[in-house]
Image 1: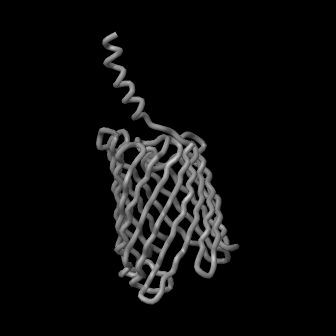
Image 2: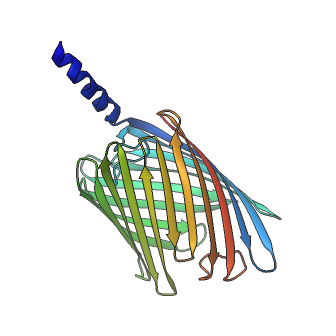
Image 3: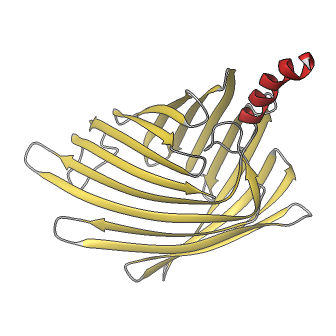
Length: 282
């Protein structure tokens, strides 16, 4: 009897730390963007809805919204976006999917329709190991030449759940190169932290970089922040009300002195962005 009493708290802790699994993730998001210069201001409202279904359960790494760095489960997805400009609007709807064969080959494809203009996407890759994926992606706007992108993704496992992952991509002319990385670490006591960085070098444009981090107080609650070369700084909070429903609130502000972001206004564009999101995971 004494052994059972002592073991009970340990069993409760083990159950609370067990990984959850999901097969579908649906996001709804509203974003208000304000771009302003010394002589004018532009407001753009954006509404986004997307959903992804996995053909097998996908396990979390602790936090309810963190999954393995390289997805290896066949999936299908669909999305819709609506942008409300001051004098116009725009709609986009898309579908896509990715299939993982048992022999390691990966094929994917999709189509996005933006105001009656189609963007086609197709990809093929090979999973050399659970931690290393190479792929080639083809994108083509309707009635335009195709562009090709070569991608490499590598995951280095640090612990049962912790990892550091790397992505590298370049176009077929080697004019643009992007290297990104993400660290996910278990701090103990059901707290976790992530750190991310990306760097893009292009022959015809200035280099661009972005840094980000997220701290999890628990499996359900986190705060995050990011900063980029355009002097844009963002903060936000994410919280799961139960294992299936979460909300996100974020704010981004900056003075784009580098001219990274512009709305037909050149450099020196001040930006303020408010984001409200809802996610359902089943």
